[in-house]
Length: 270
Image (cartoon, rainbow, N blue to C red; front, top):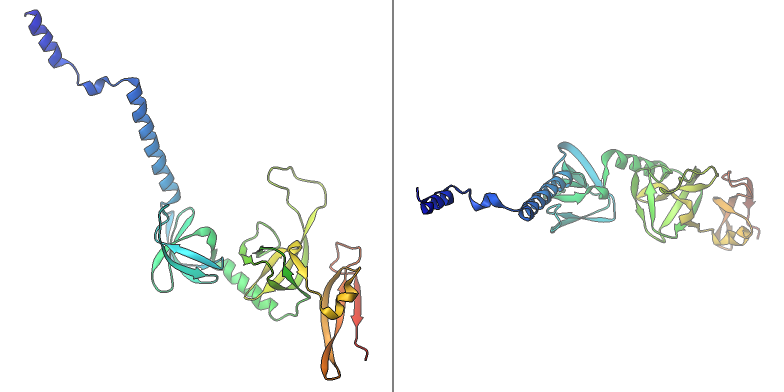
């Protein structure tokens, strides 16, 4: 066999050029495959349904919430619901619910904006109970406040009340203040005061420091220099054709652990 024929035969037997990729090309292919795998994993974690649900309902938590056509990054709003609206839950992912709204349309809503049926019913029962009782005091919020089922930050959220919202106060409880996530547990006695409030149609517990009391004008002059915490209208008397209330007042004087330790009665003298 001549030298020229031998060279031609070797050329025919040579493997395809695709098998001769160098290290840079292999690294690029590996990176692309890695990115694809990461994208699939993220989709499976966030968007893939955990399970289908039959017969579960949920309720809108914020004052309004958008229902969208997909949980993907690019989505359209198909409906808007208000606080307390009931939806049927069709499916859950890690962060989203697929729901059917009252008119039969379906869409997606973030789980953090929804309240499960059990917590919702407990909140309604709390409203029903407080509605039959006289408030111990009245006040307004000084900032946006979270309303909880129990006097604890980790307790289920029942909703939010707006700044300047009027509330009736029904109970007070002192709760140990939890340490911040990046701080060790403390041995001191720092505690937060929580108020049980009613702001129809909602009721629940919120941090007391977010509430300013609205002391009645007839009592305001007597509240100076004292920690007036509660008042109750005993009755009303007539004075020249107008009705004037008479009060029973509770104060807390130098005893932070007590709800009150001092009582006064205010009557109207002509």
